[in-house]
Image (cartoon, rainbow, N blue to C red; front, side, top):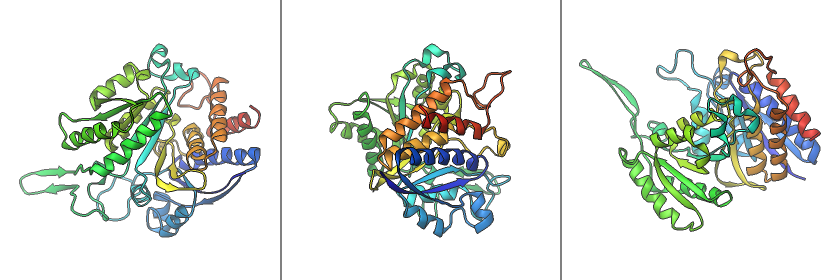
Length: 372
C-alpha cells in the first residue's frame, strides 16, 4: 500500500475538466489497489492571477514542494497577448520548472492500433511506432529574460529608424549532459537506441550539444545513437515514425516536434508528459505531470475536451513519482480498452458519428480499470 500526496493545479480553460477525469482515475486506482492519496487543489495561471494577483502564489508553491507529485491541467493566455508588465500565466510553469529543477520532459508517443485511422498518416506508416521524447525543459531559448536570470536579453527594441527583436539561446555543458544521460538511461530499458536532434549546421549551442552526446555515449556501450538535424527529424517523424525509439532534444525543438508527433495518434489530446528532476520521493522521482495540449478556451465548458492525455499523465505520475508500475500499466491498458471499444471524443470521432463527452470518456476509463 502506498501513501502519497498529490497537488492538483487545474488551471484554465479545459484544464479543470481534464484534470477532474484524471483525478477520478487516480481515485479508482486508490480504491482498487488499497492506496491512500492525499490531494490538494490549488489555483494556477489566469485563475490564480484573477484570484490571487500572481500566476502561482508562494503558498501554492510551498504545497507543491511538500507533495510527491504535481498533476497539472493547462494555463491560458492573457486577452490580447502579453503587452507589458504585470503577471503572466506562463510564469507559473517557468517557476515550477526552474525552482524544482524539472529539466527532463518525457513525452511518450504510442499510437494505439484502433486509432490508426484517426491519424493523418496512412495506417501502414504507423505500424510499430512506439517512441518517447526527452525534451530539455529548464534552459534554452524560452529562458532568455527571466527575473532570476538577468543579463540574457529577450526583447523588442524600437528606435526611430527601425524595430528589431532579440532572444537569447543559451545552454551550458552541464544542462545538456543531464538531459542526455536521462535519455540514454531510458533507452537502456527500451530497445537501446537514441536519436539526438539538433541544428548543428547553424547553431553553436547545437555544436556543443553534439560534443556532449558523443562523450556521454561512451558510458553506454549497449546503446546505439545517431545525430539528426531537426528538419530531417520532422520529415522522418511523418515518413517512418517506427524508426525512432528515444529522441532527445533541446527545449524549443522538443516543443515543436512533439506537437507534430501527436498527430501520429490523431490528436494532441492524446499525449501525456512527465517533467522530472533529481529530487527523490519514497517511490521514485518528484515530478509534474500534464497533457501537452493547451487550455483551449474555445471549447472550455462544452464537454468537448479529450481527457486521455491527462489520464495518461496520471499513469506516468503513478509510474515515475510513486513507483506503482502495476497500477500505471493498468491505467494505460484501460485507456487502450476504451479506445478499442470505439469510444471517441470530438477530436477523434469520424464525421457523422456522435462523440462522447469529456466526463463520459473519463467514466469509461474508470469502468475499464475497475472491471478489466
